[in-house]
Length: 185
Image 1: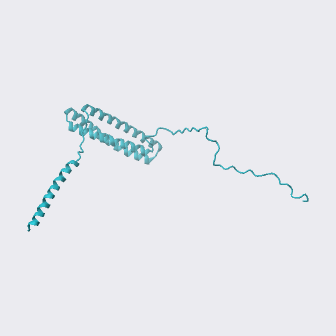
Image 2 (image 1 turned 90 degrees about the horizontal axis):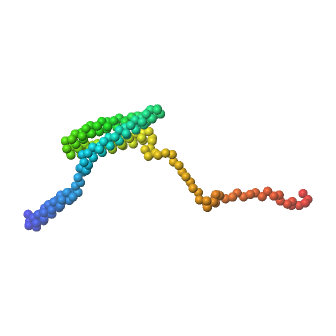
Image 3 (image 1 turned 180 degrees about the vertical axis):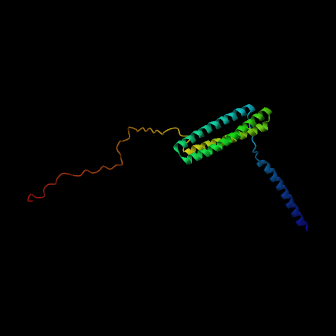
């Protein structure tokens, strides 16, 4: 091995080590902590979780009404769709009931990690229930944002002419008789 090759090999090794070390430092800057903590007190967490559970119950009641509507219309496709959503919703409700019990237990033990976990779980369940409620509305064909029939009021400026300016008037035919060409006819 020549001295020149040894120097080049050593230089390449050192540059590679420096680049590798810099890459590790850059990765530390690029890391994202996906764990978020709940910034609510235990009492606020419980109040919010109860609100979520109440809204879930209201959504289940609404889906039951939609199911009755589908039964009355005897529309089996809509009935099956809403029934499927209702079954999923009931399953999520039972998981929510368990999570509420676990949340109360975590609060009574002053276990912040468990409290945050259960609250996050209830929040996710709440979001899923809202999605199922919207999907149930879609099964029936009702729009959630429907507020009533559309009413259009039109005001016309009095300076606008009432006749159509693009309409060409039809010519009036001449109905007068021409004079006689000669008196001998």
